[in-house]
Length: 432
Image (cartoon, rainbow, N blue to C red; front, top):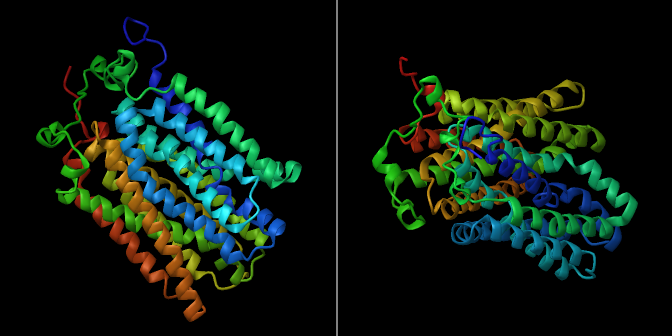
């Protein structure tokens, strides 16, 4: 496929398209939990707190599952791990239609988290990083867009619930996961180009810069890149801990805003419908901005992350400035700016970690980073709720969110991926 004058379509794009679709299905429950939440509340009459606890359980199990799923991918590859995860998610979702007690809900929602993790972002990031070298920022951005785009499916999920009931909607999603995603992944997914006798994007004629006389070697620190990084070896380096802290602080402020933005806007006097519309705009911008990680292939990871952090900070300031419903343009502007920065930051997390520790054991290492990101995401919303319960306001939470933005950005610079691998935009063309 890559030899000769006409190499055809680079297979990495097929792998990436399949990954995007898989993300839509894998995260359809998590990012549309609020849609199912209302339907389940109405059906069983459970309390809001005890029902919402299911989401917290899902996050906790997901965080614990990340390193496990990463290890499974390193050991068995995506053609085994992803189909198994998709089938497990399908079984768990279909079983959700049979629950009668809250403990059953907790148990099954926890199982969905492991299936989601095994077929989701943790499993796919190492594969996409293997297939794309010079366009790694763009490729992982497209993959991240699949995650956030699952939230845009909310109207479709609601339509399923309206037509079939929440139990029927679970069964439909289960069928797509088990009978569509699982076989597609088993047939078409490939862990690395070498599995097909290829050499990767940088050596493919359609992408090679050698033809134009440009350099293709992005490695800056050859000694670092030549190491066979394992989790045990990575944890002994400062860069691992800088990246870990960046992920935790990023999860802390991102999930806090995700969880509380609707409540904040309704407290300010806006209707729930208006607030839901703001969330929809936020999700669309987060999805679109994920594609903009292409910018990092030219400006560098740290610079692009700083720009995206600035957007999230401006968005937070705008949100904190909203005290009433007299200026409806402000929530819209918040959704546009924060949504853009959010999507870009999330995508760059994977791109940066791949630049630092890409290798045979990257799946396990990336699983640790994702677990810490979700851990930060579990602490932030809870702490914000605690502060509101004690003070009756979110005002004291915002300074902590601002600090989290600055901290995550500073730790990305300390991790300094530019000192390990440069980006194509920073290379100087060799005179022809």
